[in-house]
Amino acid sequence: MSKHRHTLSVLVQNEAGVLSSLSGLFSGRGYNIESLTVAPTLDPAFSRVTIVTFGDDAVIEQISKQLNRLINTIKIVEFSSEDCIDREFVLCKVNVKEETRSDVLRVVEVSEGKVVNITPRVYTLQAIGNESQIATFIELLRPFGIKELVRSGKVVISRENEFINVKQNVGI
Amino acid sequence: MSKHRHTLSVLVQNEAGVLSSLSGLFSGRGYNIESLTVAPTLDPAFSRVTIVTFGDDAVIEQISKQLNRLINTIKIVEFSSEDCIDREFVLCKVNVKEETRSDVLRVVEVSEGKVVNITPRVYTLQAIGNESQIATFIELLRPFGIKELVRSGKVVISRENEFINVKQNVGI
Image 1 (cartoon, rainbow over the protein chains, first blue to last red):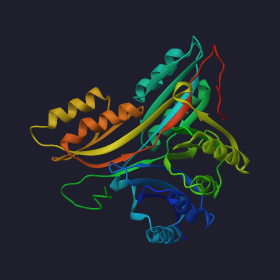
Image 2: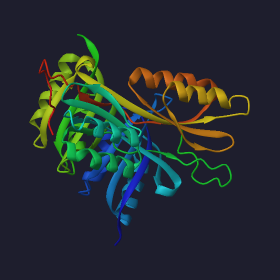
Image 3: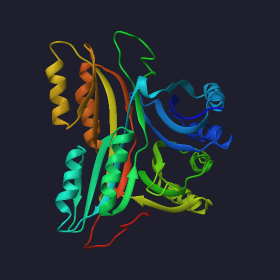
């Protein structure tokens, strides 16, 4: 059996109880959700859920089929890294001292991040990127002392391709 | 009874079933979750969940108390807009024509966004900001034709204040 990370994008009706039954399908099989984001689409009657989970391909396929059968599910797509653009962001507080301040700012600069709040001893930073860019940003800051860190979880959008029309639209 | 939007930041153990029981507390009362993000913290044994919901203050307080009693909940904080920095991001595909291309790029520029993919007729864009900045970004792009839009949901971090030490640390 082959275990991989899976990224699912699920279009659902924006109603109470949808998230609970959706996440229940994973926990019912003992599968942990690594990250999940859900927010309304352009049409607020619908929400899009992005789920990252790790596990056996066959089990994920079974879960996908069950997701499809949920009354509030409109559409479900599994993305590979080739057919989508993935982004996540992180907000983090880093300790700064007189002698490390410029080094912290250099990390922000090379990562195309931003300083969103400053106090004499702590900078609050944001950065957005794909998984490896965010991992690098965090590793570069770790030596300075990360006081607090919050990440958004992965969000994906299908890669637009006007020439080869593959999995182009996930929905609304 | 006063109804408001509420932003809850919940630190939980990173285990299967936590998200399901957490979201079940909302749906059990017929409360819809507007947006939710969950991702691991610096210590992968824990995850942080950010929930935005709309409802009666007293009911949200009851849900918070029940959340606190869940075995996997470590800490829960409700944030007001004054004591946190909030960010969300959006990925969207906008139709472009020869005559609108520079207008679309101007919106990206003033919004401090980024073009992440280009085809002759569609630009895929990203932007990060607080709620009103993201709402503005979307409204500015709407006239060009938004083909697809995915948003991350709100993520918050406590506002650092070295002078008045209020609700400074949510946890890890």
